[in-house]
Amino acid sequence: RYQHQWYFGGRVNGSFPTSDTGNFLHRFGRGSKSIWDQPVTPVAAPETDRPSPREGHTAVLLKLSADPQALDLYQAFFGGKDGNGATTDNDVYLLRREDGGTLDADYKYTWSRLGVSEPLPPARSDHVAIDLGGFPGQMAIYGGLSQPSGGGPAVVREDFRKLSFNAVSQQWEWSTLPTSGGPGPRYGHAAAFVNGKMYLFGGSGAHNAAPTDSRVWVFTFDATFASGSWN
Image 1: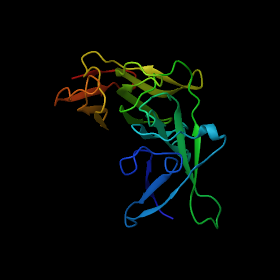
Image 2: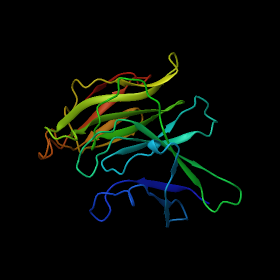
Image 3: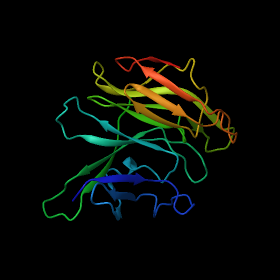
Image 4: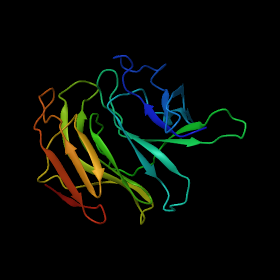
């Protein structure tokens, strides 16, 4: 057994993932084990804790415990769209790997759904998510495209939100971060988090429009990651 990079969802040979392929977790060995292993289907109990086949979602690492030594590191998935382009899911799904039994030939992978207090952000795809670290962990999302399942106009989002654990209420919750002075509505963009700053590039401010600009936008978080400023 060895470490892997994980890949879930997305298109298969240009086609939207279906129920037979869209539940697979693809794994690529890290380090000297640079090979693709056979895909696996993580278990989910109940089955509703399994995310439906999707594309345009995000995944970041998220630690649930305040104990740095606790072995509770998950990959947190948010957003995405179905085969019709509809965005209807705003839950946070957690994927965890366990060693399994001593004689098991492979790891065990399990889906669960993170309980998050309302209000929840609108469902979306083609947004960005970053891992802010910490114990417990935190993640932030920016922008994205919301497309109702029953039709209607698509909405390009410009909200900036953070998911964190509230030690007072003992609940996971979403909070808002400043957007004034930032890039505005954006989807299909990319972002990276480095040394307390989020760097954002690309994306479109209107549905099916050309990229808005070629500027690199930078958001600098404050020491508590509760606020910050754009430049």
